[in-house]
Image 1: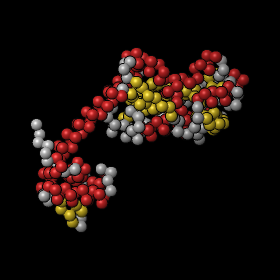
Image 2: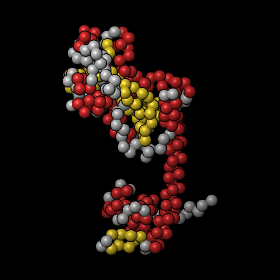
Image 3: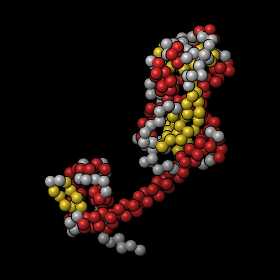
Image 4: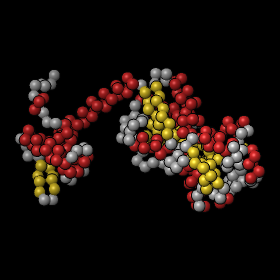
Length: 305
């Protein structure tokens, strides 16, 4: 059993963190403070208090900056073990918290949420009835922002370009299609090229959505998409297209029911115009994945076949 009687004399964890930062990549107190998200005056005060409490010269200050003394490097090595132990404690407590909560927070782009997730969630819950899924629906840009801010465990996007600094995995495949009302079907009967499509006013999703990014990327080399209207929902786009306003660009997944019912018809596109895309799960490497999040990710990857 440890003697806990002298705990009030123990150094603050924050000060030890500053010392470890200075023994690593930080070349000044300011840099060390930034790594711990501290104001520099507070960091300087914390290090002075640490030297006073330990009665050991830890820092050597000069016009060129601050570096650790020999004694300071020894203390920093011991401090790193303290921080590692605390990190183990925190990770264990977080694991217990996650297990008790049992909820995996998922943020999904509109097309993925509407047309891919329902079946995947049904099969996942059948296999893991004790794990709850909390699902929020955004466009792909907002999903990526939430993943970066670590306000969700897993993001699901349909973007063509993958975000840097995040982990990714393919969880589905899709393609965009050009569809129109039956009255519009005679507009073109032969497969249209990218150059010709760029001149056709189209109903499209808003900037920031994965669907919009995909059509913008496909037509970027021929002048980009010509918009007849922008909408923030797939349903609004389908309704607008059915009233013969203009052809619509949407995921094949989103258009299946309209094709079956004859409300919209697919328009032929040249083989040279690639409108296929992959759907991805994204997550932050800085956020420890819960058991539930890992199981959901594995389930979605395995469901791809």
